[in-house]
Length: 280
Ligand SMILES: NC(=O)c1ccc[n+]([C@@H]2O[C@H](COP(=O)([O-])OP(=O)(O)OC[C@H]3O[C@@H](n4cnc5c(N)ncnc54)[C@H](O)[C@@H]3O)[C@@H](O)[C@H]2O)c1
Image (cartoon, rainbow, N blue to C red; front, side, top):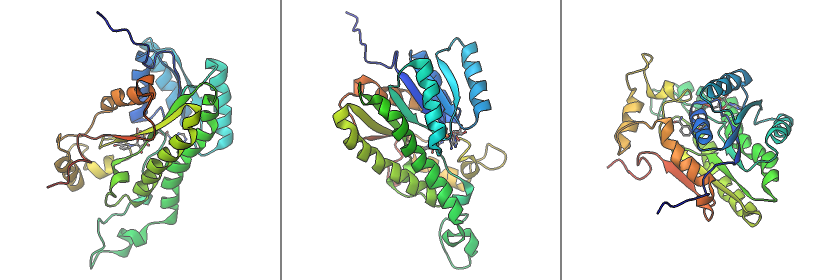
């Protein structure tokens, strides 16, 4: 007998920030294919528009591109109005906008004698730290404040983006690790805070995927050869490969669907085993 389930993402209205980016554009396409309606929010409206047009050509039309800056409350409120006008409600928020920045990254892995001071922690510009922490942390908190209000009557769920750097600091990316550890903590806070209202809050912790934010760390300028750091990542990943964006699809759909109705506050690694392996 065929089991019929109505617990997927079909019909859900999903707001996804950073949806024109590498990981969330792939996720958006998958969600649309599973019957969800998606508001593609991004700072880069032109890229979001082009993406939505591309989706329409594939017959995926239940989506709109909306300009939004996750660091600007007024911009998010304006985006919310556009989404509500089009889809009438909001069931899910995916906080995909985020990332690292070279200014929050040290050139040297460790402080050793002879290393130039500017290549170490001491050379990091406070603006680099500020930018990365703001983008990831405030850029997750503000959208929750704006869009979770619409979930208070009928329930809903949030999916945040964490990272391997949250479990254990990675060398070089000092600001990014601190910001993503903050997101893991905030995910638990908000899960607890909103549980009585039927709003679940979880996070994905992607392992290593080659994207715009880390290409300069993982690959040499030829775009193919692994850097020493890229080689280390592969050596510490039991599955011995980088992830591809589609590896996140099932985990994302599961956590935001009602299949996960008793799961809240978790951060799910999608990492080929990186977190589990000590390296020895
Ligand atoms: N790529 C990886 O290996 C990896 C690993 C772990 C976690 N992550 C996290 O996954 C998420 C998505 O990463 P990605 O690699 O797809 O990044 P990406 O850079 O491809 O996409 C990020 C998107 O966010 C948008 N954005 C940037 N600032 C914004 C703002 N202020 N307001 C609204 N939108 C803004 C960008 O325009 C871009 O489209 C990020 O939070 C990232 O930290 C990525």
